[in-house]
Image (cartoon, rainbow, N blue to C red):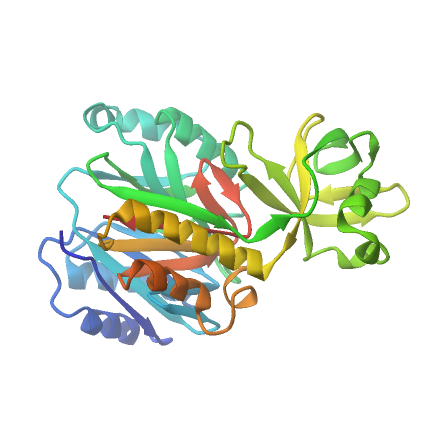
Length: 373
């Protein structure tokens, strides 16, 4: 199987950007029938024009992707510059389907694909979501359930302008992407950027995202016990360093979702986190840890390398958190370079998201890698 074609360019002029990317691609494979595109949010106003130019020049109608505050390519992370990465793939006919922007429910889409799904019992999709739509988590869960344990990778758009995604056309406000049939060989994994600092505890009194008690003591006392005396002296400094970890039920790998610590009420000894919880839910506290992030990234990559059994991926997609990248690994594209260091150089495209999608949930401070074999 041939590797995907891919290229990256930097520039603010839409036509020049497209022309540079196309020139770096070389001769376009006549069999290429799907494109991935990630571009910086500085180009949001030009996205319709860019997509039209790409569709005309390549003859490919099926494009999927998102804008992002930062994007990535093979061994390259690009911040604070108008830039774009594209990747052209060849898949057998009738092995993928577009997921149009789903903003309120998944029923109509699933019904429209009944015939195709009966012939191709698809369970994997690459999806992108608009973070301004509070229905996105439920849409992900419903789509996964509707497909029969659907498994997704992708991310929530990060943007300082418009939250735009691409699913054959420019869209926003929903969950969109591309669904693949089982004929397409794909390997996926994810890596965390935080490490637990205390035991798994139980929430014993809460309301929505406000936690009053944990293990029968005040939420703040539970944090004090876990973070230690030094950090406890100035609780205002916990934000951005200490996070809530919500363990995933029935996970045999100890998987958990990281959520921001939004506020600390010292008077009433309660905390607010970036997700809704219920009494009886498990919780633990975590800290951002660059060394642990690198170790876990390496563990993920070594695991994928074993699964590849000496093969080089045809192409890959990498979605990482805005809090990772240069902020956790270093200024010289160290995070994405680790991928090539372990798996070899292969076409890679992706972006830094405001939430990472893996399986049927939205994560934080996570890297999600998808390999097409």
